[in-house]
Amino acid sequence: AQSVTQLDSQVPVFEEAPVELRCNYSSSVSVYLFWYVQYPNQGLQLLLKYLSGSTLVKGINGFEAEFNKSQTSFHLRKPSVHISDTAEYFCAVSDQNAGGTSYGKLTFGQGTILTVHP
Amino acid sequence: EAQVTQNPRYLITVTGKKLTVTCSQNMNHEYMSWYRQDPGLGLRQIYYSMNVEVTDKGDVPEGYKVSRKEKRNFPLILESPSPNQTSLYFCASSLGQGLKYYGYTFGSGTRLTVV
Image 1 (spheres, rainbow over the protein chains, first blue to last red):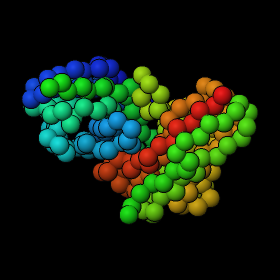
Image 2 (image 1 turned 90 degrees about the vertical axis):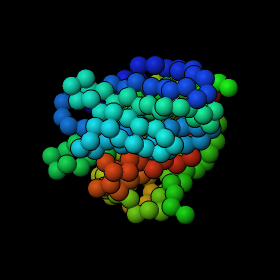
Image 3 (image 1 turned 60 degrees about the horizontal axis):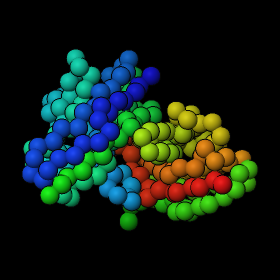
Image 4 (image 1 turned 180 degrees about the vertical axis):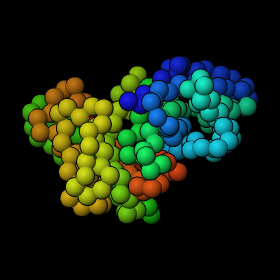
């Protein structure tokens, strides 16, 4: 069964500093990996996803993530954060089925609240 | 506008009174799903559906029912709500072949309070 652990529940940083939000996953098969962002009082928006190929994935708003199969990790990074990046971030995993698609079961981590201070 | 629409946005109800939260999508998506969000627990999948009349349990299905009689609609039914079902609920949809490319598209959420 797939599962996700986000290692930090809260990450405070100053504006223009780099940030890394950590995510580890567990699965017995190959996976698809996602990062979502939730701004205050809003729904979830897809930041980026990893399907296959290059282990460094670029997303919207300057975020990127690196897939590390040996460490079963998918950490999210941004080299310089802005006040507007303050939000909750969720890592999610979906098992691949035999046909290379997904069954529809998408499992989320507990979330990391990123707070950017001026 | 392509979207997932949930109703109502806010609902306060009493223990044991059956309720239905509706969800509709206008994108012809095969996959639909319900999640609940609780502080410190993230989003937990309740049920998902891969197509009409095809549904499966997620991680926290107890106390909930779903049905998928039409492709566009996926209502969430609480037959006898209890206070531990107080939560923020999200409906989501995706192309069957596209979940791995686009992830789920989420609705705006329904905040349910059971007293």
